[in-house]
Length: 441
Ligand code: ATP
Image 1 (cartoon, rainbow, N blue to C red):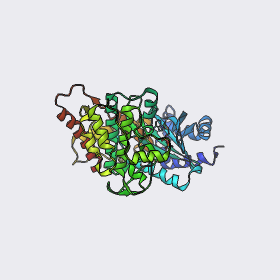
Image 2 (cartoon, helix red, strand yellow):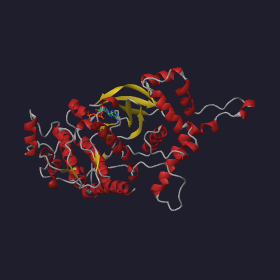
Image 3 (cartoon, rainbow, N blue to C red):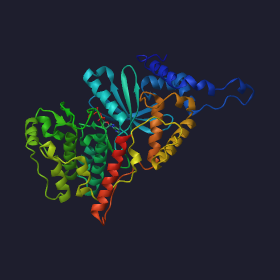
Image 4 (cartoon, helix red, strand yellow):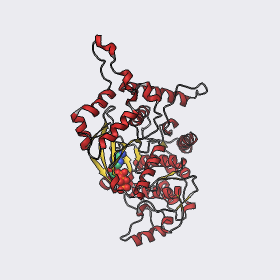
């Protein structure tokens, strides 16, 4: 009865058996148990996987899409051009996730290419201000991206309903966007679709840059690109000139538009027609209202320059006067690329970061074992394949552990900055360190 629709469940169950259950026999009740108190209780993992194979209700939920892999699906939270996004939670860890659902039958080769780039970029990114990809679940008709849930809405809706942000909120929000962009440019990933709709918030107000559907990974930061991507009001002038462009400078321009929008509640370039908008952007015709604080005005003008080479670089933005009072709370550890679960400590390690890493991994390994994942499971899976349900659990637990260590904490704006230059530099240095660390690993 569970061959439908389109053999969906069969495919998944075969995959799961292959990746997870090949070793569970050893931990199941053996002949010795017969004269004991019966079989030992099932682990949460054994219970779930048994239900997925045998329990009628669970199987029905899988068939009708109320469950996807290890996730229980709830209501709709958004939709995009090719996708619907639903709230879901992990049946074992109970964490909320966002399930981005894509209909593969409606995707042309171009859309499929973009999707695989989206997955590729997200797999490479692990930063407190970037939405995480936990897992990818594939069925013949659909593809599900299991994403970190950002329950605080997006920047566009926030400004449309509450108006422009106050200066402090702008600083805190913009600094986090900058941290995310510095990190992704540091590993040569260009977003290409930065806009207020793609800046999400968690319930506690932490910024999460989302939607990597137009992103691309370049071989180096001066590699020329030639595809128009993004949304016209955020598009840099060079994108309308029909020439090659450099990725980082296009993201920087979009950040200038975002900053203007946050600070004033209006867009810098507006027009009734596409032609006029294009003209407006190419002429760099915008004016910053005079009430915008001077340091912020200077930053906007430093970013929104027609000539890409004259635009502020991300590092200059981080060091600007307006952001001097911003301090980040996290350690550079927070922004490591996702790696495999490492083995036992190696003798040459020994820095503080390594110790913290080991402690964190120990914690995650302990939680995995409590759920019923055995040492065998972990030995056979390097936890790097997004299409494995074990990777999903691992990444969720790892993120939980990182959050307990403060990785999703917001930056603070200090009211009294005694020595502005020093405080600002400290924040800036913190960020530089974060990214340098990431690039090197
Ligand atoms: P677009 O057509 O704008 O490119 P898309 O198909 O790429 O959209 P997304 O922008 O990724 O889809 O998601 C669509 C909507 O779903 C978002 O506007 C947002 O409201 C919601 N959403 C997406 N990801 C998450 C998330 N991780 N947490 C919470 N809500 C999300």
